[in-house]
Length: 249
Image 1 (tube, one colour):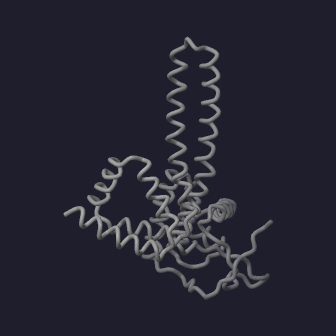
Image 2 (image 1 turned 60 degrees about the horizontal axis):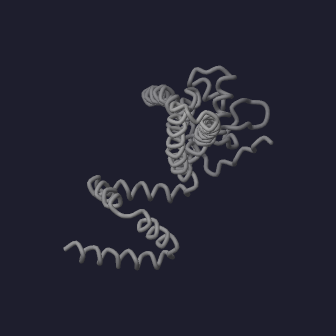
């Protein structure tokens, strides 16, 4: 089913950009496109995304195409893929470009950076993380069967053990990545903002402190805190802070 364009709630100015500002936008788009491959995003998609973010306006395919020097096909595919990634969205064209025909669709970058970031993480997990785990699981099963059939082969045994350990690592990383898109954008923003306000030394001390505690104690505390209501959590936090200060003296 073809997605229906959203309605532009407020008119966004699409006046001709100044040459100086446009030159900077295009340089940014080119740099963003070069970095796109490292993120698993095609350069054309990344260029389109960066340009629309920097223009801060809804633009038609033709306007995007002419600005970035793309062919009609390349621009259409890049915009469609950017929409599939959750980087841009289609909206009702705020003005008619030609003299004839109904108003078409325009595209604008998702304004909430935390929203599109979560979508990119989710899409990369589906496209890259999940297939990697499938390959590793099949390979681990294959080598386990081969090792069982050849118990005297130390090389197979070593490969089996390494794959089992590596699969645990990849699953843990994939789970951590998978939690990001499950957070609401404002929750993710606040969590990272708060983390950014904590000095690096404090974070490292906390990690080292947790490393010295038994797993059961840490897991029990996390499980107990996760069931608290916000009001109870505030009381517990204040109480815990007072206890820690007293013990630390």
